[in-house]
Length: 270
Image: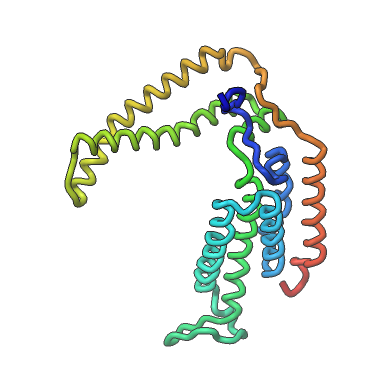
């Protein structure tokens, strides 16, 4: 009885101010900074925007498992890996006047190359971190609803794409059921590449059959609801654009402009 009145299709509500913002606001706010970061060449500017993204996500989304993994592990590893890899591709003639950090035979790695590689890695990390403002706090259904309601995206396109995306977890569930059924029946036992190939080959036909059945059920449900019969439809759940969304976008734009003016990454010498 405790579950009565709960709508499983309602927009997900979580703590954190970012979850309460319109998805389009969270996408529009960092876009100018993400675009301009492509043209920067220094270390300070992308680092500053990466820190801005970290602060926004930690303050507005909280320290969840996904946030911790992305911000604390994935991005730092990506920065180190890409930075070192890009430094190996730098033309030695461009950094010949900088000190040598590592030398192996006739090959030398200089601090100038590390700075160029680090700047490239930080640009990528800053752009990814800014995109995570929306990425970790926005669900697919809410984004589709916002595009349909605010951007006037035809609902035939938006909700059809959303239905297609929902096939992915369905395939995972079907594959798990098929694996368990094969395991109970003792089918394709053994080890090695041939046994693994036989097992996977045995998954294909039932997986395709399940996908077709699911597609038929989805198509019948959409037809029963007269999907596509009219140019627009009544929205069950609204994702409005509120004044706080406008304030959020303007504040982030202002902070981004202030950082760019203060750091001036296009000044001579960068």
